Image (tube, rainbow, N blue to C red):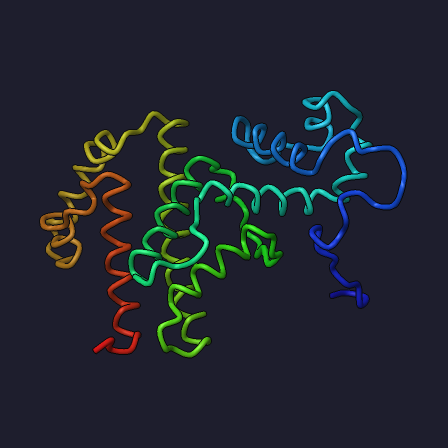
Length: 241
């Protein structure tokens, strides 16, 4: 870090410091208010001033509970992971467990689409993130080195985040432009026909004529791709026999 400054995680700072009057709010209340606003209007709308108005207090008073905007976003991103319903421990079926992680991650992102805008790495490890990490790594603890587990889970997470970001962006585009998939295909048909007639793009022609995925729902596409990712992970695991 620049200047040797050490980052202090929000979870390392006690919610109530020292003696004094009982806090009027909890971090959970502030975080939940921020999530409600972000869900309805986007992450940028969830300012300290707006959250304070929602709670009926002054903006500066919230900094006693949450020192910075980045801390608030960290709290929000961790808090929504509660909705994933991750079990206390893996079931022993790694494929079922990682499917649960992937599908529940997608569901949380689709409910809280502002998560797709968190482009910078969020390495802060809150309690719900740590529980998810323990569960996912525990599911893959089947005799592979820890570095391989890291790589395999990054492959899974990369697929999930890429797929869901694309799904969210497509929904946003449809809302803004009114362009449904059917209208987009109709509008693109003349140009696609031109490309096919040129004979210069045989692989693209196969996609147009034979691919089923472009005609699937977002959920069907996600599950189809997820199955292939899990097949790849299976190939890197030791033979259980």
